[in-house]
Length: 230
Image (cartoon, rainbow, N blue to C red):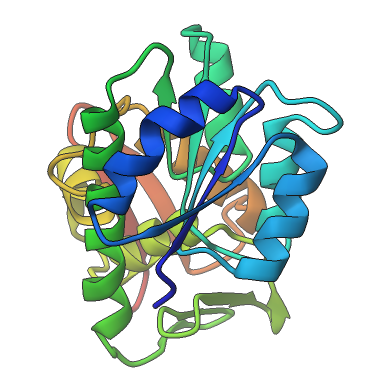
């Protein structure tokens, strides 16, 4: 695993504050002061995680996140000076794994980094078989999803949520269990991120009752990957 963490923020003071805290965790800090430089540094260093400010010159963090998600599931924590729900949802919809609102403490940032990186190893080391339901294939080892033979552009978190649901067909998975298993028990973000990810998964699968499987909402409880004739 890479030991580089990329901080993309046009405020050099924030980078200077975070750098020693992150380095004490055993990582190398690389930084970018605008969106275009962030993309170049990402492609050159292939960092293990990215701290990505939304408001940056040349290219904003949302666009950078979208570009990265076209080719990589590298964990991304969005940094924003705004606290409105719309900004948080925009970042999550772009494929970010978490978000943090300025002002923040360096200790909180480090805790978020630890939480995300802890979740990577157990899932990637869990070499389960390919899950198949007629037209749907979920390969958690390679983070790939195919529907009717066509690969879908799902983010890492979307694949993990779908895999967790599909690996336990016709069982209700509570929202808190999805949060704990996919985001981690020390996740600091909005629990509604589960609902946002489910909504995106349904849209990308284009579910209209045409398959013998579906993702059902069980109100007040969670979600269920419903399969007929298992």
